Length: 455
Image 1: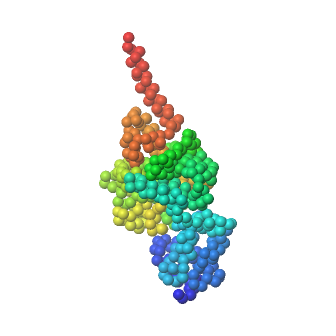
Image 2 (image 1 turned 90 degrees about the horizontal axis):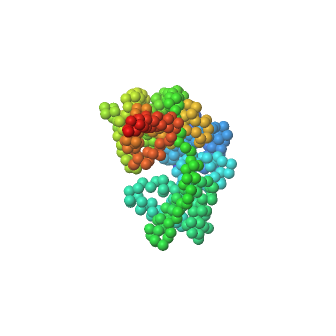
Image 3 (image 1 turned 120 degrees about the horizontal axis):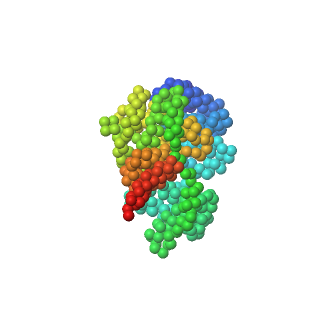
């Protein structure tokens, strides 16, 4: 291993050329950040490789002058560069590999812990615990495997059990208590109606798994009113008005993006599909180019919730938006093979993640002044799906169509396994109630007139 001159512009240039960034400004900006980082390492005596202490010091110094999201983004760049150096055999070790081994695969919470006031305590809270490593872990793991053999994905339930398992691993002194007492201890860790509901659900799941092995083990109940209190704590769906929908779409087209001129059209098309087709955020992010059929004017949604595929016919206006986006996408140099992501980011040279779609569309909502500038409050991106259902019901009423006869078709279009899932999206608004009352008045008036004629 030769000593590496960290402050080496030629080495940084080799790395950036290997990344294939399309926009020249990206190349220039990243080169400046990497020169700053490597100069810092050289000034602090890093000879063969940077260590965790030096990386932490650099992050803490720059956390004082950069906004949080900028710090996280640039930490990703530094991690990629250090990983590349290690893969090229130019440094002895990669400090990020050690951090991920101890504190999990996600970089953002690790960086957040490193720059906190008590980084040691924050990192301890991020410590990676083994999956189902508690004294009840074997029962939980076997139950998850059993449910998947039966055909369930069981992802949400698995995550709930993993949270319960991590609590038990952090508190081995509770090993002698009953399952009911363990659940109550976990529920007290975060005193809220929703966490109590989650703890009781986990306890009921584990008790069922134990009961299947030994019928003498009682199945725990969730308790009266616990689920209702949790639902009341959750935010109610928000139905956008027609004016708000127009403002959101307009804000997408005006989205500031001087380095990626195609992004406003991308965001506009995402929002059109979220509202007009009622797509979930994950469904938008996972769309492939081959899922769009311009000849049949349909969109294929593959392997979504409940293991379902569905083919959606789209309105002419929606198809026109997609055709326009595809033209912009081609001009941006995105790949044209059917397996490539529909929503492509030439800057990143890949598709959007589910989290990335949610973040950038939430920013559009803020710019449209339909959501507060800060905080997890106000309307959400998923509320566009609720709005699609509400507006469809409204339009059926106005057209004189009986909505009840159309609900099975709506459930199929939304990808629900039955009509009961669709009913969750039916939120009564004053406008919808007025339309329903008017329809009832017309039908009822005719029935009353017929009765008055009878002798």
